[in-house]
Image (cartoon, rainbow over all chains, first blue to last red):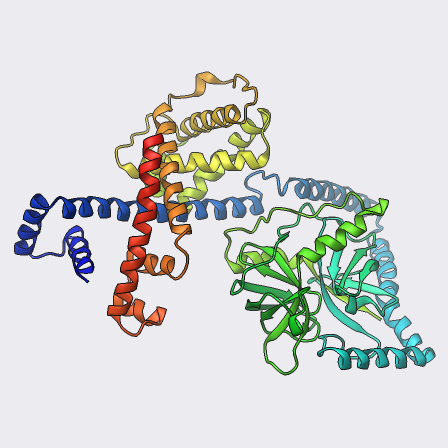
Length: 368
Length: 191
């Protein structure tokens, strides 16, 4: 207790809060008592260092923000944006040429017509097929329903689907060329898979690897209209995360991207399942397959299922299993060069900015 | 074209961590440094690192209050970045090319030394605070950096009263002090 009082006095002395009498007495004490004197010197230094350190950190943080802002506005040349900028540049150039040609030849209307023609059937295509399947292959539907009931029976309620024929989930890119991760249960019963980004563009995709025990699926976007990204902003964590780590997720429980916030509540999943971990976060059907991020912008898991009896208890496949499934995939020659980003570019940003940068890489996964 | 006043204003802004000033200096100088680094066997990431470190050198300098810039900010930034990059190349044991454009630089040896010293100090502090763990870290930050009073801290950290919070803070501070000074004295001894 005495020590606390002495420290109190030292702090008041440093802050200049002492009365003149106290001050005189204290300065006398400093002269006679070397220990007190050392305490004052050390404490002053420590506080000074702490203050400077915190200002230094703030400044570094500002620099990081400024860098990203300026790079995004194109005011500085940044490596992350450079390939993209090149594409944009080429594209602009190309567009200008087309525009001139079109205005000269008067084919603007024609190209729009052609565009409409080429786009419409593609968008209608899946729906049309679904209808056909609905009517024709009723048995399939029945089977899917049975399967679904089995799943529900066997485990907890898995956040999927509202209609028997359509599976809806979330997926996220793991490389720039269109390789995506989602849950196996989202796509395993589907013949046709489509993914849709937050702008509403739909792309065709197919399953390249299905790992049902781990509940991880790798799908690939296979569509000419899909443009590769220059880089991914997030990375995928190789190790297990700590309990209580704050996390957030992005997913599509409805057609709009939805943000959810929570924390890692247990390092194992349902009934002690070591493949997964438990997270406390609001999730709904459709969130399945969505990425779980920590505050450094690293993916730490794939949201997979929720417990029906406990509100907010959600299970996620741990991110290290993404690497295991990937390793298996890399054995095939077609995918042996797949590169997953190892460094997150989101470190040090606040959630709002992180989400802004991530949302383009999270997709709705639709299966029939 | 830029008047001297303009540059002075920018530096003053920087000293107060004004985001506009930081942005302006960043925008006007970054590309130059990136070219320098990339043309001398560095990557764009290196360029970002070196440039940001240069900004920190400039920041520390204008905050010290004794700084008088007698050349353009551009020249200064270039000189510091160039030296930092040379040093980095040497540390990586790579062949350090003779960076051209020597005539456009000003001597910055003092700054580089000072920067290294400060960086070491901050590393010591970062380590010390990092090894403290929670809730010690937040507790000390709330009291010493955010200058909250003990009553508020007790409330937000869930201590029953200010006296308890104070006891806890004292224990945390003692731990920080122990870790910090152990490393600080070591660091100074070696350096």
